[in-house]
Image (cartoon, rainbow over all chains, first blue to last red; front, side, top):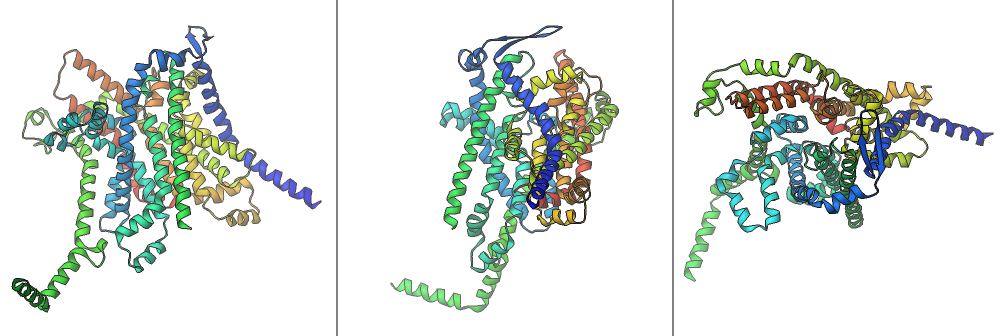
Length: 289
Length: 324
């Protein structure tokens, strides 16, 4: 008797939970799973759209072969510079946002004002406005031209890297603009570190420098990886990114194939990040205990 | 040898001078502080960095505002860089005409706010279910939630267009609004994750107490759980509103031939028109000023919203379990 009642309670709980999650699941199936499957289907087909109907002819891996091998230069010319650029942008964004978050966490007069200003990028960076600013040349640092850094770069850095480095330097300010949400995440993460630990380390005579490396940084490791993931996703899905803008309505089949190739690249990066994280986390918790 | 001794003697005499030593100590205390992060030097460095970065963030806005009020004389005058000699509001008027501001503004407001409201409610429900309720295949759905977060919207965009076309929703707002109703839409997965991490920090006893008082699941959610997540809600509302306001990608693909479009689209259309005019040889010194005025008109509402919301927003960021 008692057993069945408990079972009933459990089913009831499951029913309740299912009721709450149902809208999301329905939404997922209609707006995510179905389009996802359909785009996979289209990527293996030649899609012909006529006035009255849409025709699909199965062509196997032809789209993939075309993008990756036969017509590969089209993708690679965009992809590799972009990957190199992101390889430089991501560390800059992470270090910068960590620095700013830690400074903003200090107590000093005018802190609120600075916080208001530093959250401004969250408002702008998603919009057309930033594109407008890039077009106006607001993204570059004027120091670049005065010191003729681009000239030295071209002279001393191997060709494949010089252009991306130059591009990142030119849009350095832009890189800072992209770190709005990252600053937020670090700031929120910094709040989770208990004040008592800092108190204790101060009493033990540890200076701020030491405290940062021994307490703040290890404590922020999860957030560093969260930010890394967010930055990767954000950079790779930004609508103005060169490969994303190649996905358009001119050719449904090959666009879908391109989107899938691109997605598998992103997925690789994210999985790499996650793998790295679990490793770092393990070694950190090992050294702590 | 002798010189060294003499030097030593001199040094000890100098150091022995108590008054000097006291002064030095005081100076050291003032400049470096009892601990590094209390001294003047440290503070100066902090302020230096912060002010510089703040300048980087503010400069484009300043540029926008100052350019937009320059008339022809000020634009052509090379001695005027930042502060124009006179104010001219004509560009604002022209830009607002070109943007069809009144109507597009209303469209943008209603679109962004309805999506934001729907996303808050639906994502809160989903996040709550993920954090505190039990349902079949919970692990699997959690993994799919993460997957949705990582997935670029571009991969589903073409089938979505076809899907919405078959519903007859193209050129309406429904493709943006309806997914929001189900906890998806623009960055919906992120909002679900924010709510999930917020709700998973609350103590288990809260549910039990409410249950004990005889509250049903829906009553409990809307009376206890939803109000309690205020700080997360502030963050989600602001993000959702701002991102939907700025979003250009979805509207440009779902309603490319529509008459009534949000501001982000009208801005792009305006830029296209101006480029066309430029190509046709109509070169005008006003182009930049008008563009800046248009940009200003678009972000001004966001700035106003942000200025009102910033206090709760900053608080919310610290408390919401935005991370966990």
